[in-house]
Image 1: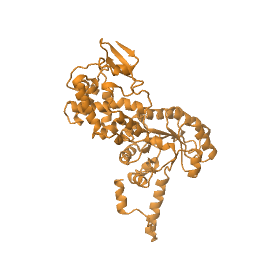
Image 2: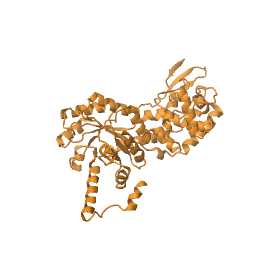
Image 3: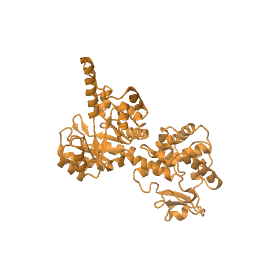
Image 4: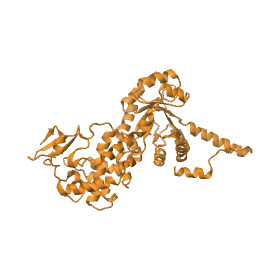
Length: 436
């Protein structure tokens, strides 16, 4: 029988209170529990904790200050594939000794052991354990849950199991204190880096391929977005039809190589499982998404669109979800702009984008009424938008359309015998974009 215990610090520092014992095992989650410091005491604990500290010691916290699913970021820094994050999440759900183990979790442990070299030993367990223990706690911190781990369990001198309140000791205390505090905080900081760019006016250029994005980075832009029109049309697909999901994901895989946060235009979510899309993008290392409420027939029902926003945030709490309100863009139902925006913010949106908004009074009113950053197109001078309180100005499809026009003009100049532009990147400068 368990009982709540108030005064966690004294229990965590008391050697007579031990972690719940786990039986020895040779495979699956049971093997992992029996092989990590988390559920060990005495000499086993000292040895296994040293292994975990060596794993963490090889990873500089600064390398973790990046966007993306925290376990994926940590795994990559440890030399493992980012894709292990999904298996780690499955294992984490069954990690605690009082939680039943699923066959799926046992299979996930086997795959993680294989990725870690194939040996069922304490070194592999230490690497997997570091990832598993970073999973739920770091994700909770990113989502703003306090404390991220509410309780831990100990067995008292009389054999009773107590739940220790971690409200004042987020990272534990005593011999079992979390050795990865600095790493966890770095992961959380990395997940919020793109959010912090909105503290001042962020000018966000929108790319349609790797070269255009890398060129924007070289020009000094601190973040890059994508344009759904550019991505779709560049692949011979219509925009806003949900047809470019695969192409958008493929581009995202390339863009996360860049040294700046990347946010992706996902149209209205591309249909299907929005949570799956969010998880895929977050695992890749994408910092944000832009999701629109415009539809072929006009505007989405606000409640249905709010469900899409909520699904993105639930599946990937660290994503900056920019909720696009298309009332002005489509010139329909403009009186509903603020109501729609508030509905999406209530569903978890981190920002609101209203393309087509070009009147100072309306912009100022939205800035004042919304608790999140307002995003517009460059419909007014940048200084004016800054003074009005706008916190993000996106170029949208403008650079893509300008590039098309410039390309046609250049080809036409060749055909007509006219001079061609001379202020262009050289061949070597262009090829060097692949290593920004």
